Length: 299
Image (cartoon, rainbow, N blue to C red):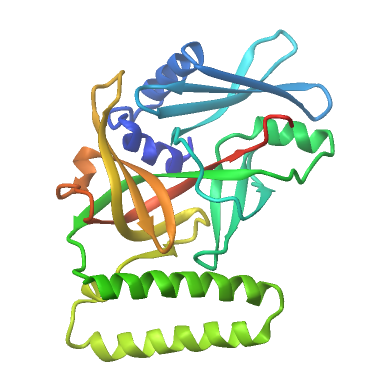
């Protein structure tokens, strides 16, 4: 049993499912009640399946495995996820397979933030089919990001006047343009980005001894620990709602968090969230970043 996957069950309302028998029972319920089923062939003649079950408002569980020669489904592994809507980005997207099992990591080179985001790929069947047909890469794809958290807290926003807000917006636009230019080989843009980062670091170093760091840093999106798809984030809450797991009745808070130019839907068990979420306030916590690659309908 993957401890990482098990830990985030509570983020979609399954905090009481802890023993192997309880989780096996949950897997059976998910397969039987799946709202989405997908199949593909792997390793020449093995039929691989992906079952997704919604337990209310997008709080979901995915079960993957293969069928044997007697047409019996053999469970491989599961993972909880939030089935988000819309899309987050259409920038450069690539995919790499994990070594331990048939699962994949997506890599998104985000132009706005200037960083590469690694996420756990939610929908692998379509990708494997396209890979088998040698039809990758596909033009016109985009990514819908979502995340699960097993602990976080609500912070008050940093007060800003209209001048400061406009200044931040203009800087964000200029930075995105410089990042795009730097990627195209513009050495002046690369130098300007480096100098800008050094100026920001220097300004923070002067203020940190006298002020709280959380009153200086508005948001961040940083890798956390040794797992490549685990991040520490802090960002503004753009939207939120309370969801209820239809099987357990547990309350889950879904927040759209805008951190470091990236918007992502974060789900967290209400018992694991310290403070009251409100639009304009900030969320700070550790997340497991996931994503769904949306391929064009004509693929």
